[in-house]
Amino acid sequence: MTSFSPIRLAITPSQYDDESSIGFALRIAQVNGFQYLSRMLSVTQINKLVRGKGLQLTDSLGIKGMYYDNQAVVRTPLFQQSWQINSKVCLTCIRELGYIKAEVQQPFIACCSVHHCTFIDKCSQCNQQLKWDINLLKGICTADSCCVKLSDSPIDEPYLSQLNQLTSPQIADCLLISTLLSTPNKTIIEPSKFCSTLNYYQQLGSGYKLLTDKDKFTTWLTSFFEQQSIYLPSNFLYAQLWLLVENLNSAWPIDNVVEHLTSINFKRIQKPINPLIVSMPAATALLETTPQSLKKFSSMGLIKKQNNSRLTINSRIDVSPIIQLLSQHTVESDMNSLNSMRDICLKHTIEQIDIMQALLEGDITLGYKPSNTLPDSIYCRKNELIKVGEKVLLSKQSSEITLIQASHITGFSLDELITFRKKGLLKQPVAYSSYCFMSDAMNLKNKRHNNKKTDKHTLLVSPLLI
Ligand SMILES: [Zn+2]
Ligand SMILES: [Zn+2]
Image (cartoon, rainbow, N blue to C red; front, side, top):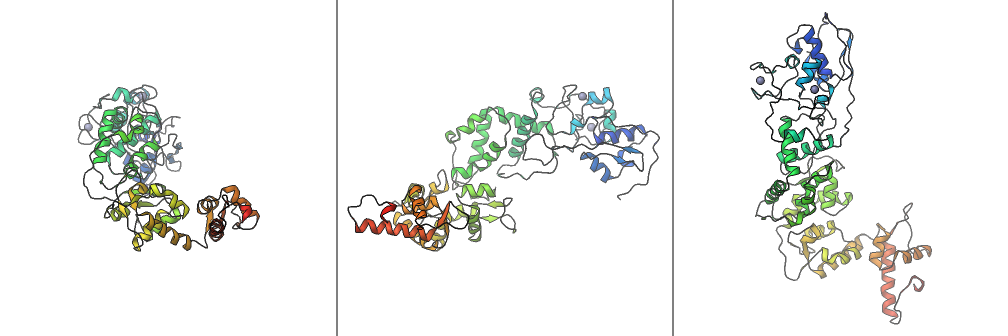
């Protein structure tokens, strides 16, 4: 049912400047003798009011209320709008002023700006969350089975006095870490439209505890790390932690622990590799690749998109399949880590995806020993890597590369490459001055190589000699 037949109201009050929309509706209903708000308004209307929309009853009731524009003033990945839809109220405000202020619906405000006391969100008698209903204005529990008089400080939370001192950005941090705490293995946050945090003060308290107690935080981290698979490189392990660190608004005592993560000792246990779902930028960073190559990872089954849609900046990506595959390969004594052979990779423009493709095509034997990053953890033989590199260079003949890549391939400095460009030997793709064609770079490389062979006295092969 969406429409209500117009009701004639005996009393039509006005809204206070700082009164919440839902509180205003409760007050109208109360002064007009309704027992429940639902007798005066439809569920749809009530839901709109709870979400901060103004009361629009001009036609039926002759009352028009205000709309609150609640753009998030505090940065948080948790909610799109800084607006709390479950109720918390200041009992003293209700007693002294007779109305509910709009500020109680701010998720990052934890105590009354007038009375500096904690709001209440639960009944201490029945422990139920308070609902937006008329009993709130009477200071009575909104659970029908309870209806006791609400008491001023019912919250059993050891850190309550500290919570009252927190700034809004600090409150946002407490809510963030307590959300992560309650969902271990979370590496991405899908923001909800509104804040609907239940047990608000307990959430704040557990977040505050973790952010301020270094030992507790270290214990939490240790147990988090110990639950992860032994096969994950460390930076994969820290993916969840970066989510936290990137989104904290304030400085906290635990910052010091985060800065010295590598000093935390934890036992790595043989555990199965669970899905590790991260954002697209995080996947690109962890795999040390580009968004373009990420598509190839996906088509080769090395990562898994969370749905079948196109790969976009908002995609959720499971990066565990590549680790699953690599974990089956052991390191032989004549192998070196990819990272230690970075110069070979640069010279041949070998990317992470090329290594994986070579593995799947049987062109290279890999070893895997989890270390700090993926290139630190992947091992192979030098001669096989060079062979793969030569194939990569050939396959990229017609492609465009950066001048920096050309410098790695040819061994010429950027200045020397510019001289070649002026001589017409390193053409510029349309509109991209920092790019050139791979084929030109390969020609320069071969000429340099031949010059070295034919003229043994030429120690320095400069662009002028070619
Ligand atoms: Zn108050
Ligand atoms: Zn109760």
